[in-house]
Amino acid sequence: MTQLRQIPAVHLKKNRERSVVQGNPWIFSGSIAHISGDVSSPGVLCSVHSASGMHLGHGYYNSRSAITVRMLNHDTTPYGIDFLRAAITRAISLRQPLLRNGTDSCRLINSEGDFLPGLIVDKYADGCVVQILTAGMERLRETIFDTLVTVGSPQFIYERSDTDSRIREGLVESEGCRYGDVPDNLVIKENGLRFRVDIAGGQKTGFFFDQRDNRRLLGTYASGRRVGDCFSYNGPFTLSALTGGAVSVTAIDQSGEALSLLQRNLQVNDLDAANVTVKNADVFRYLREMDDRFDCIILDPPKFAKHPGEVERASRGYKDINLLACRKVAPGGIIFTFSCSHAVEVKLFRQIVFAAAADSGRRFQLLHQLTAGTDHPVNLAHREGEYLKGLVLRAER
Image 1 (tube, rainbow, N blue to C red):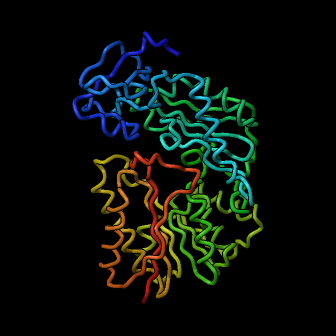
Image 2: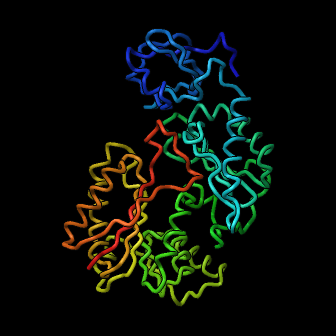
Image 3: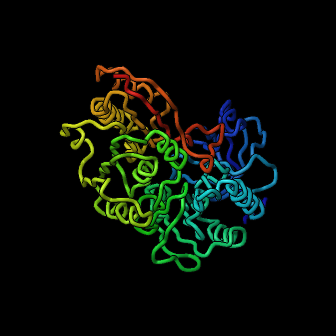
C-alpha cells in the first residue's frame, strides 16, 4: 500500500462532513472542496478531512465515478492490508451460524454492508464467487484472493466481475477461475433443498441468496394452493412452494435456459414435475391474458431501475405488474411482491403496491414486510444498501 506521506487528502466543503461522521461510506463530487496530492490513478487511497481540517478517515478516490470517494475506515491509521484481512475475516465469521440446517451457501461479503465497498463474495458449497466492482477494490484484488484462500479454505474461487458498475469505474470486465477447479455440476443446498447453479452464465453470481428467508416463509403459505411463480428464474420459489405443499405451480420466465435449470432442479430434489407447468413467456402478457386465478402469486422481477433517473419508468412497471397480480389472485389468496431496485425506496414501493391494490377494486391485508436475509447486512448509515424490499398481501375477497 501507499505510504502515509504519499496519500492524497480530500477536503470537503463546509457542513458536508455530517453523513461521513455518521458512517455513510459514499462521498459525491459535489461535496468536495479541493484535493491535495495526486488522485489521477483510479481507486487511489486517500485521507478525508472536513472543511475545518478534522480527519474523518480513509477511502479510495475515483474521479470517473459518480461516487467519487468510498470510505474504508474512520481511523487515523491508513487503511492497509491488515485492515482488509480483518474485515474479510469478520464478515466470514458472521455467516457461520447460517451454514447449518440444510444450508451450505450464502453471501459472505456484502460490499458496503460489511464495510468493504465494491466487494461481493458469495459462498457456493465449498467454493466462492467474487465480484470486484470498483477501482479501489481492483487495486486490492490479489490480497482479496489470498485472504479468501487463507481464511475460507475454498476449493475454488471464480470471478464474475462483469457488471456495468465496472465500466462506470473505468474498468474492463474480468471473469474466470482464479483458484482451484469449479465442479462440472455444482450443486448447493438451501433450506434442505438442492440446486444446480451456473456460476459462469447465470444472473449475478448464479443464484439469489437474498431471498432465502422469504422462500422459507412462502413454504408456510403454500399448502393446498395453486401458485404462480412469476419471474421464476431457476426455481427456488417454485421448489419452496412444492415442498410447502402447493398442489400446483406455474413457473413463468422469459429465459428458456433458466427454466431448463428449474426442471433439472426438480429432478435433483426428486420432486414430481407433473405438478409444475413451465411457461417460457413474458410475465406481464401472461398474467394479462390468463383466464384463471392463482391462490398465491410471487412477483420477484429483475431490477426495473438501475439508477435514480429510471425511477419514474420503473414505478409504472411495478404498478402494472402488481395491479395484474391483484386482479389475478383468488379470494383469500396471497401475493408475495418484491423490488430489488435500490433506487426505488421502501416507502415508494409500498405506495405503488397500495395504489395497485386500490385500483384493482379489491381489499387486501398486509401480512409481512420483507427484506434480505442476515447474510446481506446493511450499514445503518447507508440506506442505499437496503435494496430488497417485499410485501406479503392477502386478498380478502
